[in-house]
Length: 301
Image 1 (cartoon, rainbow, N blue to C red):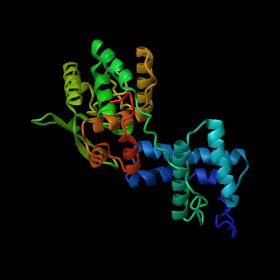
Image 2 (cartoon, helix red, strand yellow):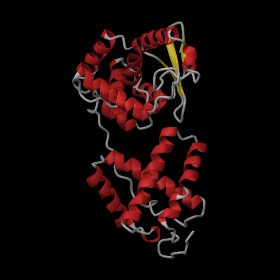
Image 3 (tube, rainbow, N blue to C red):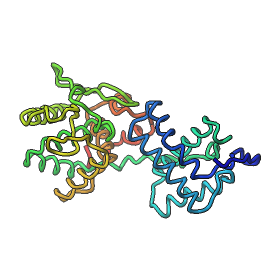
Image 4 (cartoon, rainbow, N blue to C red):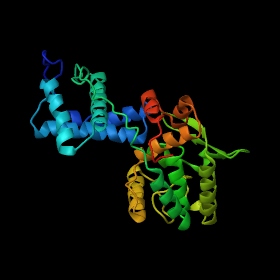
């Protein structure tokens, strides 16, 4: 690898192609730190795209400064129509990659370390409208789509993340005398008590699943990506496609996991839950998001 110390920036003269060669090791280090597969994929992709940007604009790591980083953020805003929150996440992922290179002593300093992240913007009104939600629920009931009903209640009532939903196994669904609880793994592992509608939907889906032969799904996953004997795990992209298709079939507003998660916050508050209880239920860390959503948006739960 071509390296030459640069005293001005504290970053060695490392070609972006050489830096990209560390990507698999970076992904492995994230996994060892307990990051979810979705986070590993996002951070790796964001770092890889930044390396490609450097190559396309003939920028060298040794000469990266604040203005170069600001131009990249503006590039994300202008050419990719990213929101402030999306740019914030991408910059954070890139900064993690440069931290990794520093830890491996590939570079002497992280040029992103002193670069302020874009401000996080809470979106209390970005919740799925209750009228659209009720239309979709009615459609799923009428067409006996138990699998999608279970998914929708988990997303819109319990507020679990897409990465948490795709990782669920039947052994995580635990019936109780009062109903059922769900064991959620990952970085924000927790056990939550399910709403009555969610519990009924999962029981109905499991009954249909068992009647068709649960042995076809050797992984024990609750939600598979494809039908038939060769069942695979449901991916986040598969879930996104499913929700998009569902909105089109019902003529409803576009559905996203973020909107359903905000719907869940509003729903939990409507059930007279405290802010602390909602944070624990959804595995939230930002108090600001809870405070912003305590005023339930008009037209939601």
